Length: 113
Image 1 (cartoon, one colour):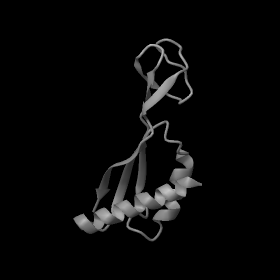
Image 2: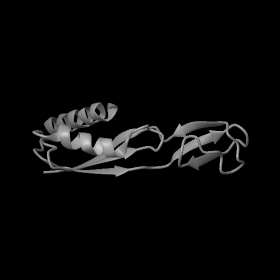
Image 3: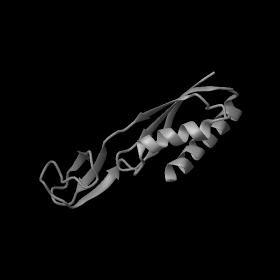
């Protein structure tokens, strides 16, 4: 399950920021995870609770934003929003699409004490 590794990376990044900005507790971690990122949100939430135990993230709320993916259509040359990576172009129905966004996983912000 790669979600556990993602959670470990998030907690490590938060701990790094805690050292730089001298905070001792995290109340909320807000992540942006694109729809094409291949992350199972339920597994990520479970993994975060497990990985956060004994760290300054323990008990923190994990808020997740899921922006739609975008792709460029080879058939109509439009950049379109998509809910699923394999969806057809909503403008022309074409199937030849190149993702341009929606694969990201970013820590948007933290609420800390």
